[in-house]
Structure formats: C-alpha cells, structure tokens
Amino acid sequence: MGGGEKMRGGEKMYSTSNPMPTHQLSDYNRGIMGSHNDNNARNLRVYQTWKGSNIFCLGGRLVFGPDVRSLFLTIFLIMIPVILFCAFVSQRLVNDFQHQLGYYVVVICVVLTAHVIILLFLTSARDPGIIPRNLHPPEDEGSSISVDWSGSQVAGPSLPPTKDVMVNGMVVKVKYCQTCLLYRPPRCSHCSICNNCVERFDHHCPWVGQCIGKRNYRFFFMFVSSTTMLCLYVLAFCWVNIRKIMDIYHCNMWTAFLKSPVSGILILYTFICAWFVGGLTAFHLYLIFTNQTTYENFRYRYDGKMNPYNLGCIYNVLEVFFSKIPKSKNKFRAKVRVNSSSSYASSMPLGDSLSPEVPKRSFDIEVGKRQAVADEDFEAIQSQIDSVGGLERCGTQPRHTNWDHKANWEITPDIHVLAAEFGMESGLADRQKISRDH
Image (cartoon, rainbow, N blue to C red; front, side, top):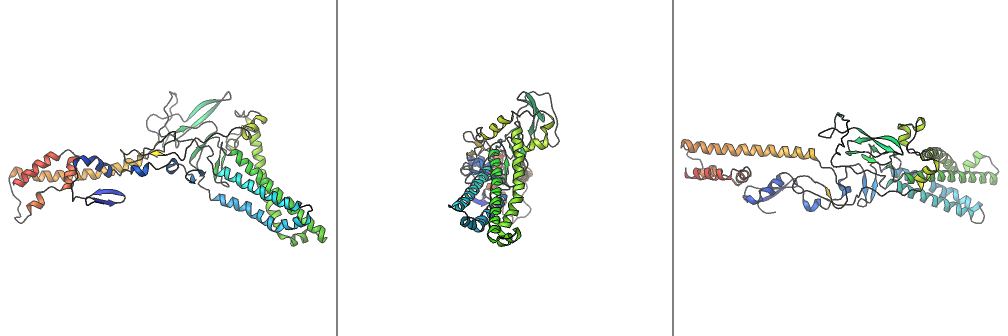
C-alpha cells in the first residue's frame, strides 16, 4: 500500500497527506459508497448468491435442503439394522441353508440396502423443481382486479393476488408469491423451510432434508417403497432364523429369542418401521392413482369435487413413472456479474443464468449514511469559507499574535477533495489566495 492509502474494514481509505487528483474523484466516490471488487465479484456463481435456504455441495452440483443433517439420521436408521442382520443373523442362515442359498440372502440384503441409499441421495441431493425468482414483479396485464395487500413488498400499482388459468378445460386459480415476485404455475407452492417456490410441490420431507416436487417425486416414492421392502425382507428372515432355532433346539419362541436376541430386536424394529414406511407407501400409491399431491390432498380435498389433473388411473401412473423428468430451471454454477457503478451486485447473469435479487433496502440505508457524512463535511467547509470571507470583508487580523498563520489559513488536501466534489474548488482557491495576502 502507498503512503496515500490506508485499509480499514475492507475499504480503501485515502489519507490527507497526499491530495487526490481531480480525475480520480469518481473512483473516490465509489470507494466511499463501499463498492465491491470487480475481479472477486465476477467469480461468483448463482449458488453463492442464492436467496433460498438451500445448502450446496461440490460447487453447486448437489442441492440440499436446510435440514440436510437429518439425512445422516435416516442413513443411520437404515444401515444399523442391516449391519446387525449381516453380522449376527445371517451366519446361522448361511449354515442352515443348502446350496449356498444363505449367501444369496446376505447379498440380496446388501444390494437392496445400496439401492435404498442411492434413491435417498437422488431424492435429497437434486433440485426438486425450484421456480427461479424474478428480480422485479411482473407487469399487470390489465386485470380489473386490484387489491391492496398489507405489508406488500411491491411498489407502485398492486397486482391481483390470484389469476385464473385453464387446466384440462377447468379454471384453476394461481397465486402470486410476494417472495419470488411471480405468479406460481399450477400445482406450485412456496416452501417456507427452503424459501423457494417448487413446481408440483408435494411436501417438505424432514427425513430426506429436501422438498418433494416434480423432479424428485419419482425417486422419493421409490425410496419409500424400497425401504418398505427392505424392512419386510429383514423381518421375514429374522423370523426364519427364530423358526430354525426352535426346530434345532426344540424350544419355544421365547427361548429362541434368548438364544438370538438380535433377531428379536430386529423383528420389533422392522415391524414398527414397516408400519410407518408401508403406510406412507400405500398413501402415495393412492395419490399416484388419483393424480394428487400431499399438499392438494390436505388443502383442497378433491374427493368432493372434480380434480382437474386426474387423467385416469393408467395415465396417472404413466405420468409419474414413465414421463421424462424435466431439466432444472436453475443453472446454479452459472457465473454472475457485478455492476461496478454501484455499491451492490447487479447480478446480471452470463448466458441464460438467472440473477439474484438486488439488496436495494440495505443499499439505500448505506447511501443515506454516506450522504449524512458528506453533508457534515460540506457544512464544515462552508463554515471555514465564511470565516475567511468575514475576515476579508472587515480587514481585521486575529486577536492572538502568536497564532501560526500558515497552519490555520492553509486549506488541507482533504478539503480540496470535498470542495472539488461539491463544485467549490475555484472559490476556495480565490479565498485562499486572499488569506495569504492578508
């Protein structure tokens, strides 16, 4: 750093030892306004400026929800029973079954577990169908409805809270999202946990730490149904092991549990889990056959009225399992630019990437603070000029003869800078010359 610059709080501050040239005043203003470094800002990507509550890994390639830690609990609840089954229960099955059937029992259990874990990550680590936010509210298309919302964030004319759209020949109302500044597409809802609008929003699942939407509902259902199969598989072969013990030792069931306590624990554990995930699987099968989401089922209750999305049982199943999964509407790894002429990132994307919102409110507050400081400096300059002018008009000298004239009549370089900023440079030069003559 040179003698004319000092660093404080990440900003470049100019000392008063060296006057600043007039041609650098615009840069000085941007420094006062706290502008960002262009080189650093241009290296930012969309996921680094994301307004939602998502957690990104591997440079934005993996997208998790804010409660991703619950994913470790889910993996623990899946893996521990399988490890206990393979370590304690499967040994007896390997010995009792002939023609290496016992080994197949263990291999199938391991493969099924790996399948469940893969489906869990496919559900949790991908974009569930997030609708990109708008930087500005949409223009009113001439609707006659105008509603003033309390606490609305939209300046200017208010937008109607709902719009009517046609879905399969039926009128469906879509709502306006004040957070994302858009009219949500049909079946879209805003998740308060992830703070995103999600297309075909089903629910936010705390067990996978992610919203369930259009792009991961298929994997979610396969995960739940596969977990049900795994629970039933372990439960069945634990019972087989108990029956084998009863036959070999000619004992009752309680004695067999004492001889293989791990089998008893796994039977109780998998029985409880099978009821939970099995009931969830049955409920989602009903939703798939009727083409509903969990949110719609609890919110709208299509049982008493016509469901505009129901295409029939066969087509509903084909839509969920055999339709093409749409590409993500967000390019989380796309680069964004920073507008160097202001103190905040304009976040104009490169290519087709979407831009983050502009923090206008914080910018206005910061500008207000800077303007207040500038006004105080201006008043100080004006008072010095007035004092010099007063002495010039009356032709008097200071009362104290030991006053250092040079130290008090010379205008410092920082006043030169601020005077030039307010267009007073020429006036100050004239008054300084007069003061030196006196």
